[in-house]
Length: 244
View 1 (cartoon, rainbow, N blue to C red):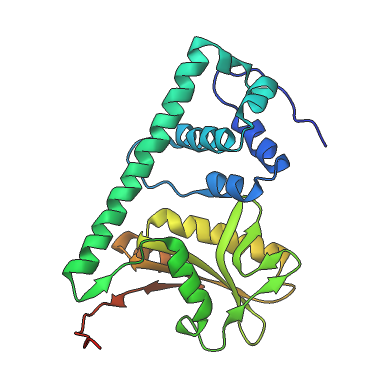
View 2 (view 1 turned 180 degrees about the vertical axis):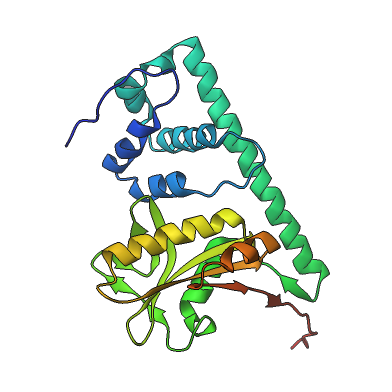
């Protein structure tokens, strides 16, 4: 196993944490933390990722090993304070996301239609089974790297990678709530990676699916001809059932 470079830092070193986690069988979790899109008004992106790293390593019983090798400052009073700060940010962000989910669940009960998926995985799995909603003849892409669901790339995973009947590839980025303008940047990165590594002469187009597509995202995508936008919705209804 290749030993990671050691550098004494006051803050938890993410450049060591990412490969350390991968070496300990946590590649999927590391990818999710590393590529997570943070939609929060607090400018603490790095501290938030460090909080999820601390939580992950603690849950897997490897945090002390990591600190001993790559973050000895953890044993100081300053390091202990930073660790608590990282975890506090992670807890607060979890509550922030949970509050948004609770709002969506309330709408399901109060409205006959216009609900939203509580989890992005639900939306992803639904679309993976109904790719025709995004284009006739679409199918999941698959190769030696994996399937078209959560397809692994450098610095992240593509929500859905689909293939058209003629062989062109379609990168699908999902947002359970409102799409953001930075969603386009993430999608273009994935499209660029696919074009460089997978196309072999085939074309690549992108799709963003969100509960709501705001005007700034519409305007940004109007300058990118190979990107399509979709808004999703569900119909919710109740009907009486006769007892036996």
